Image (cartoon, rainbow, N blue to C red; front, side, top):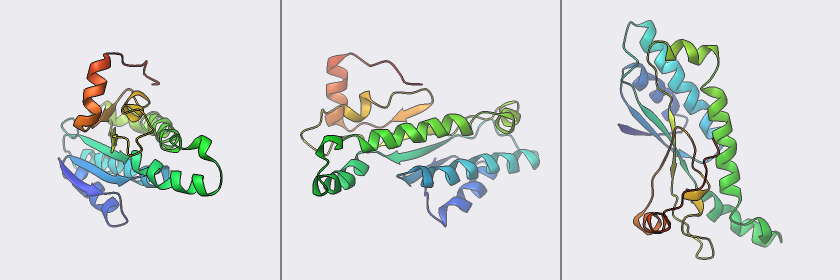
Length: 173
């Protein structure tokens, strides 16, 4: 799996690579505005591969959202404008909106046609899930982002508390 950034130059490259059967990890996703073109490029790439007579069943891709970095950037602004009560909540809300959109995109007739040929969803990957703010629980971005067809990359400092508690909250999928 190769990494391709979700940038203006990266989006068309994703479509071409998927169309050629290359597995792709799309990086640098911070918002819904970044995510939607990524998912579209993935689906269009699968359609191109299928139209050319290629196999889509072996193609895998993840859309990697950087989670804690959103709160790191937004929390400072919230402090300045006098809304500290919502610090540490924007990144999770952003991720949940993206996940809801993921569920919409990977459903319906267009997607079902690809699934009939063995296509797999482009899974959402939650990256940068270690908390940067010492006031937040170590597992904030793990416990809050458990969902079907997601991947969560955890740094060791976050993994250890997750394993120690042994209590995984119910998924929101």
